[in-house]
Image 1 (cartoon, rainbow, N blue to C red):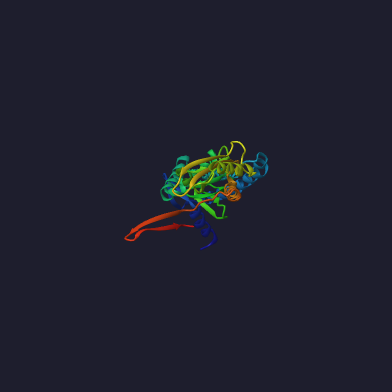
Image 2 (image 1 turned 90 degrees about the vertical axis):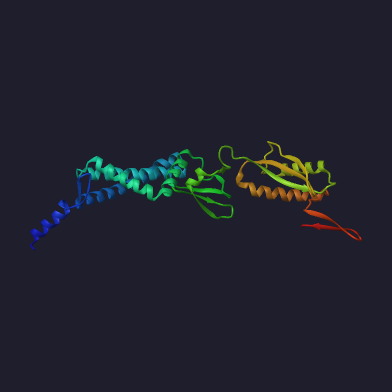
Length: 295
């Protein structure tokens, strides 16, 4: 086979040989090559545009990291779609065929990746409405921690123990989420305390309130309160209530308050009780008394 015949064969398979059809439009290798080139050009353009926006626009307006990520990803796919559309249009593939192709692909992806699609859409909603953003302290399904990343599919939460928990975005919309940082970040904490029967209740309440006031991280207003909740089985039960300006220090403040309560009660001779039980058993020789304590 001479070079001219070889070239004719190559030209035939490149331009005329139909690989498949879309709405009676034959797709050849040349069409696929144009589409590939369009994708590559679109990727380069997308990278340049996103880099320019990130360095020259978003840094100046101090946009949220999660929102920035979403906008850049959306822009990336938009440029990619436009590039493919332009590329296929240049080889005379009608708009209906192009849209039909994307529709078929979209339906296939939708059925095959329903959970992925749900998380993706949920991520867009989260990043646009922003009920959850980077830096927020959340509690969801027993997980407590700070939001480190809000991506299109998942949200990364870091617990106080340094454990990273990856939560699908759909869970943040479907489940009940406690966002301690949303709106007003201050929260009210409750510390239960039980003291022995016979203790000075008024004095105990005064000590509890003073312990809260002495802590620098406790808010003065609203003023801390000590509630006498109930007469328990083996203790007089109080509840200390106070406000802190930031939920991030919740556990630290509770620990400090507990230490201070113990010191204050010891100083004033007030006993913090522990569970105990008295048993009275009858026998032929009389009543036998047992005293059981659970320390």
